[in-house]
Amino acid sequence: MKRFVLVTVAVLVVGALAAGAWVYFLIERPYKGYTDAEAFVEIVPGSNPQIMARALADAGVVASPAAFRMAVWLEGAGRRLQAGE
Image (cartoon, rainbow, N blue to C red):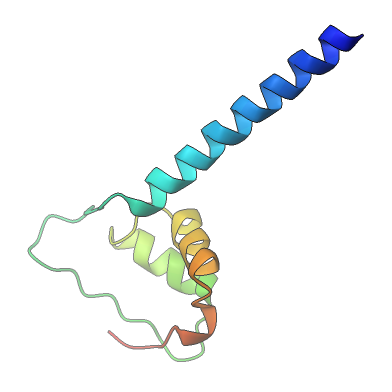
């Protein structure tokens, strides 16, 4: 029983480290999923972070909506996001 608990804890720790590394690299690495020199994305007034994330991901500006939302949450920037171009 003791061995089972130790193996379970070890697997959980390794899994947590792997998940943390994946989130870190997903958020911190530069991403450019568009071919032009710049990309313009219009964020309409009243958009919440989920709508912004989808628009930016669809335009290739961010890797995924989940990565954008995670970065916004980690930075505590949700209230500072603004509509615009």
